Length: 319
Image (tube, rainbow, N blue to C red; front, side):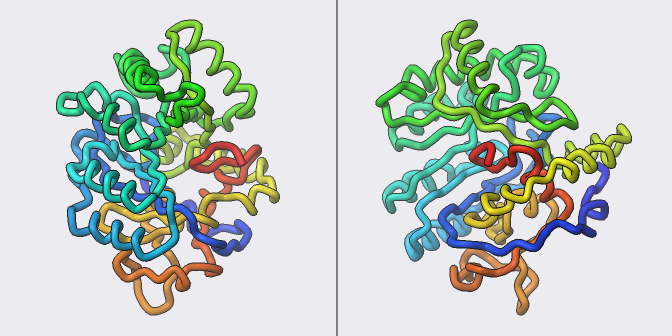
């Protein structure tokens, strides 16, 4: 894989500082049942990195000792971590709102037959990745059979009340472009997603989030190999919108990797850029003090233009 960090480290991206933290985003490991072209994690079935029980307990202790009450779980496929359900149930006992970033196909994997019911019973918000509502586009990006398996997953969730008005069970979809382009306006694309999948497949959801493909890991390597990296970075830079700087997710979120180390965001985590600390190389979640991070500088690179380009994007969609 071609490394993108050397191309991103030197940057003129504006300096930014962290505000009040409200979200703990945790990567439970890089193991996944899919291998997607756009993946900024380089996740897949052969990855071995998985968070261990002690680190999971460190996360629970952190939630217990702070007022951060949003736990955002990602991967890989976070549900493939053997401690996923333990972490969810313990976080819910503490009153945390839990988000599961689900690829939908995991709901049909052997051993995961009760996963959808578990998510519903614990009122977990599901953010489900569905890069397009057209079968051919989904399978070009994610592989043969993924579209139908994703639709099956949506139907499972709908049957439990997810995406239904008044159920209290949030089901949001995540869109990302097929290649080196910015996503279309979120509102208009959401209208297409609400119309087409419902008419074609009879599935429902609450909101659509759009996400810019980040020029890192698998997607970044693909751009380099095709000679598109510089053009894509020019697009992100030219599309920079200053107002988005006030809403980027790194101002209110910290990201934790599978070993428990802390980063400003998931993208910095994948680039190996930990939070800036004067007295140590890395900060572990077991050693964290909120006051050590609040108001402090956020580590930036040229990839940060991806979050501020056009309508802007975060893990909760357009800014």
